[in-house]
Image: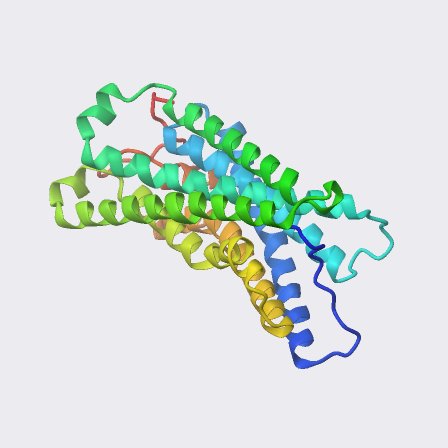
Length: 317
């Protein structure tokens, strides 16, 4: 979340090997961002206009797709500005800083939403009676609203203490980053890992539970969490910890460009996961995208010998 001093990574005129790697990886990241924006836009459109009744997990996935789309849009814009792909556009430093703020905001929302998804699914396995009978009807909507608000508040505080235009104090910015790293890397991340691990253990050792819950949704959640931890965690570590270490220029340049590429992969991977998990080999080219997405996010096991509905049909929201 830091921004002291101005953080634009400048590329020196001499094209050494590190600079070539930077441009190649940045080009790959740009392509990934474009494809990811198309995929997340498709998910948003399907869940917004093609699904009449939404399960709790459809609500979470819709919000996650919005956060990922926002992240990819800001990432693509920042990469374009830094590499001179938009030379005719005059962008002030304040606009560039604002894009970085929105990118941090979207990253935090994605992390918190994945934590909520894995935690709620874990609770549905550990406490099935409570989840089925006593769970608040609008729990998913309330949780999503709270997480968006919390991320916005955190980003506002980081901007107030760290943005260079407001003459911030570097010690205060460091303190804010340490608090946020404790919250994100010390609370959200462990909860996500713990809930996903418990979910995996419970489902693997309980045959009756595997029959009672949707195996596709189980795979979707675990795959999304694994991809985020593998691909997006390096960027968060850089923002909150390594930024303050003072790495050598070449090491810092390579790490930040690789972590940008991996985080772009993470935000672009979820639509691919949904459609791979939801598709059936025998009907892969015949059914609509809405049917595939609805099957992947279905909260109940599929009836044997019957067609799966093409929408997320759970009466609870």
